Length: 529
Ligand SMILES: *[C@@H]1O[C@H](CO)[C@@H](O)[C@H](O)[C@H]1NC(C)=O
Ligand SMILES: *[C@@H]1O[C@H](CO)[C@@H](O)[C@H](O)[C@H]1NC(C)=O
Image 1 (cartoon, rainbow, N blue to C red):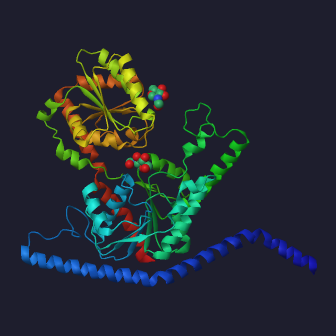
Image 2 (image 1 turned 90 degrees about the vertical axis):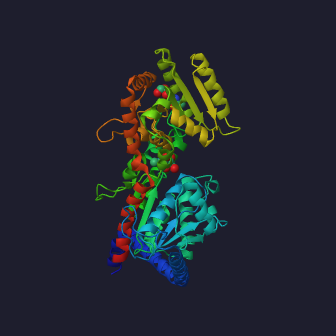
Image 3 (image 1 turned 90 degrees about the horizontal axis):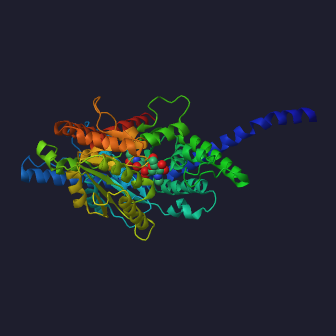
């Protein structure tokens, strides 16, 4: 009797992990249900408030129209310039963006995404979870318009203020930082759901753990992540075994006992990150580089080939198109000048460009020029770096043909974009390089490093024809500069026009179109659940 009981017990043991996982899942469900019940009233209050404001705005517009006649109808929320017809879905889209006031490229993506969502679903509510307590809606809408030229619909934008943002700061986790920050983001996500449970949840800052958490708490809420940068990359894992020492700060860190520990930790973390990523319904990446890594780490076994679509962040290319003419007259204003816009930092490899330019310069009688424009972070080694580059220009005997411009204002940059011929870039495996896109939009012929984003995303043939050149060594660069210089004015102008046309891929409009397509999936899932 006793033995049979033991045997029965032993038979259950292998099932224990499954039972535990099941219990955990049920526990999270229950927690989710509790959160949903607890925040229901707040959600209803927000919806009522937005509806009241919408009614007031509509009323105001109607009276304006009556005054102004029909010409000046406020366009927000109408089907203009090819945007899809608005839909009356009125769910709450939660954007998880704890640092939403940082003002950088990630913010441009957030606001462009919200603007696109609002145009397509004018009755939806876009709620931003932010840790910035000092921001106020009206001021944000105005700042976004000034800074990024993006028009937001104010009444349906809601800020929800997080109070536990410190849980995701790297400085809190001197050891096991990746894991610490990731678990910290669960606390922050919990903080968010305590404020409001959205109808669809989107992370725009790389908190994949928060998204997976949402999935387990609220299985009915569709989720998405827009990934700028993988939390751990396969490059990092490979660098542990590197012996050459030039694979970044972790080069060769996989040696010794400590190294073995680090290796186990990173590989385990990568597994966990992969598991987490696979819980997300819709995955978007900001570039081919990011997509490559995310596919490697997250790709579910039976994922479609479109898993992790690339949606390029909107770049301000339209502005440059307006300000710089690409015409035969404009062509006459351009000198035989190579322009490199990049921060003065070693990885940008200005030195390579100097050597390449010197080869080009000494092989021709045309007296070409090189202009290096970049920011210099004060009291950093950058200043020393610029000094060394000047010395190098002297040694290469191109100091008179080379101009260094530090921290130039936009007007100066614009002048050089208008009067230079070639836009160059010397960095190896740059992830993207928005400067290259701006150069193309301004009409520069790109001669860029044959790697990374410039190769994969930017300097790719347009309608089957080249828009620029890729180079590896200083000789390649020098040859490419010479080739551009040797083209006829007509040929060069055509290449400039093709390059500019190719930047349509990076406009806000292209971003909005792709964003809305992914959102359709989420809204469809939400409606059907
Ligand atoms: C994607 O995001 C990363 C991290 O912010 C950035 O380095 C990279 O330039 C971005 N790519 C694009 C296409 O903007
Ligand atoms: C600059 O480019 C040269 C030639 O490709 C390369 O050998 C060197 O390591 C690069 N320097 C940096 C700092 O990337």
